[in-house]
Length: 237
Image (cartoon, rainbow, N blue to C red; front, side, top):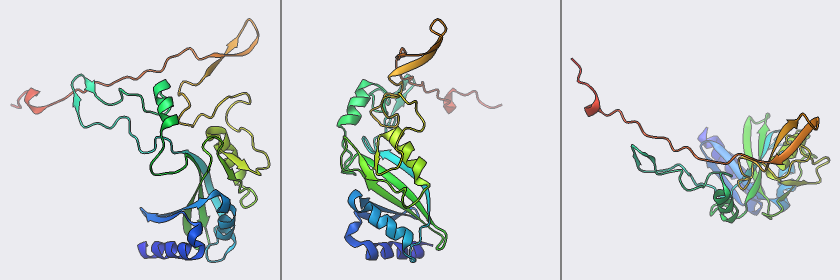
């Protein structure tokens, strides 16, 4: 298995050369990173050339790499009063501090914040491939649409646009698919507050649904540590 995958990696490197920003084998999975300007050419070759023959797009999703690799709850110590972790806001959208942190944070592992990730399947070769395409502009992330290559990408790209704000250039019908038509923002961005911006309720006096500023406050419950150590336990008879 490992030899077959390594051969596949070498085949990709030989075919696409400098068009690949990254090509690696990790945990028996092959991933390539392609610049957005060459994405369509590379993906077309992966679909049409017989030695690759990736006929199916199994999935497409967006990724926000701001604050990538940070773990808010990682800690090396705890007491019977609770954990030291989780006190400083770093989780996605937990509060104003976390939002500002996500905006300013630049992942050292990635030059860009947003990426579209494609999961391809070749039935002919029983092979899978992950393709990652980064949007060059963090403020307005734009990558090319692949609907012309795989029709199944239509709703996937609309979902990534809705949740992450990634714009897929030349998509035939790029509009929201999960959130409300008047929704403002993109829920899966790490600078989007978990409590949202507005709340919705039915107003019986007006006889319609109304939107109001969110009334709840974000908070963190720090759990206590209950220890069951041997010297506190009664001795067995």
